[in-house]
Image (tube, rainbow, N blue to C red; front, side):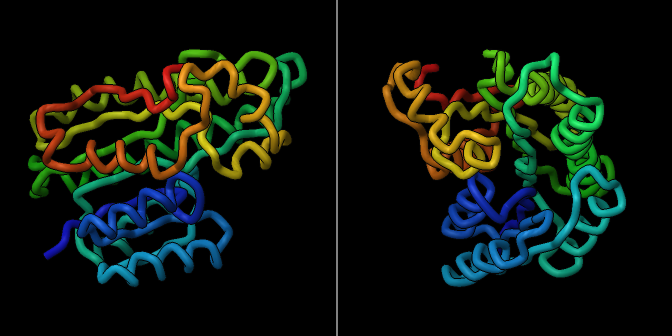
Length: 248
């Protein structure tokens, strides 16, 4: 029987790449998506095409009821999850701090921080050996921005990912004796549509020279790292961070 993982924000970018790679590795995969049902359907089709079970569940990770339903539907249709990839997040339009509205900040923090907390909370309930689970692995998507600060562009996004770093450390220690490992990946400049959605489609071209490897990363390269952290190969790794940033 295949292990089951949940990938939030799994309809595009790093989330989609992770879901498909996981299926190729023998996992059954439940993806969450916010609004693009056709993109979610395409990912599920790719999962089933390699012989694994796939499922998509619409919902907003910042909404507690939606998160509870995500895990309930996954448990009912695929089985209890043994892995969670906390990938859902938003990158707002570029802005200096002086121009950021309270509404923008609340939205970024509710999705990127609260959403991560809520999903991890539910995952712990299903995975913890203290509550009858068999253990599992949680991988949080942080960002190189947590180290770099993203001045003049996305300081709020960077701050939200800094919060995810602290959350990863704290939760890893909290559930270490319950069979659950918690780690994070910090992607750098990755070739996805997120840059265009934030207002600068050519952002990677502008910043490529600042990357020691002189190239952007791919969603698949990040997904490979996530899959290692989900797997038994990383069985003694928790509370750790892996940079997938080309040396930046």
